[in-house]
Length: 329
Image 1 (cartoon, rainbow, N blue to C red):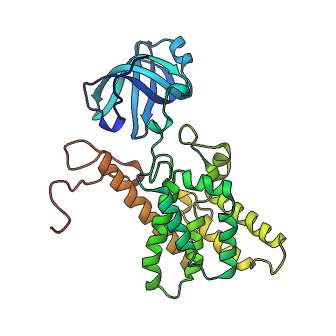
Image 2: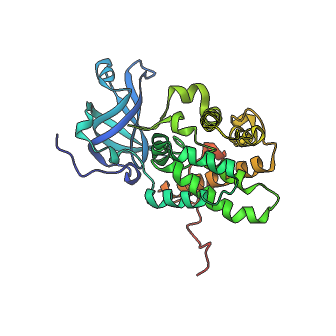
Image 3: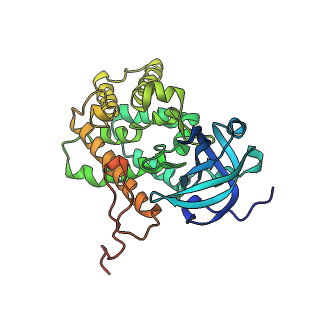
């Protein structure tokens, strides 16, 4: 199979001829108003995803496609309702041996080793002996930490790429280093530990071996509940080693941060923040995720307009300050 040089999804423009491999997801066989079959699917690579449409499709072609996998596509790009899509002329599945996974998995642009070492440095500032011991127990779980370093922070929203969870966590820890001195009454060690573990459940909520999707456990439990469960599991491990048991009230406060960090029941928190530390983690998490989201929307928008397309997560388009400078010369 001969391919042209790869065109990344983020680079595509209208009226291009395409002949290359994409990751395909959620293919659906639909019918037009006239009763003709067509296939709708998402085509993606590490830079983003785009709608794909194959008109005058057949059931045979549809059933040949994986629910999620890789396909060779020949077609063309076109604008439809202000969005770019690929009109597919030919499509067929390909095996993973024919592709480079890193072409299709979006990854952090930052150095993972440097971020990891910085996280260890920031966690080393925790002075509370119980919290420090709990953090060390998590850090010593090599398989869990391997997933923590690789996991995305989300599927489609903020930090939705390999290494995104680590990047998001380090960003929050750096933010806390600046904010905590302003609020000396807040328990800094509890905040630091809460930031480290607030999304630890995403290591099992998300699968990211071929593409980003929710695991069965993620769908049934979610990362807030799973995060609290992981904390309980590690505390039981610590208590089984003898010595003074982990303080129950401290465990409750830490788990409260995890289950309350989305801030509202509408967004999945079973309880609302009820401690200063929980409020701090919630608002820092919301700030970092929204800034990352809006900056990413601006970066990936290639239209010559002042606004991005509508962003569902913030219920508005994002203004792009490209016609003037917000920074001093």
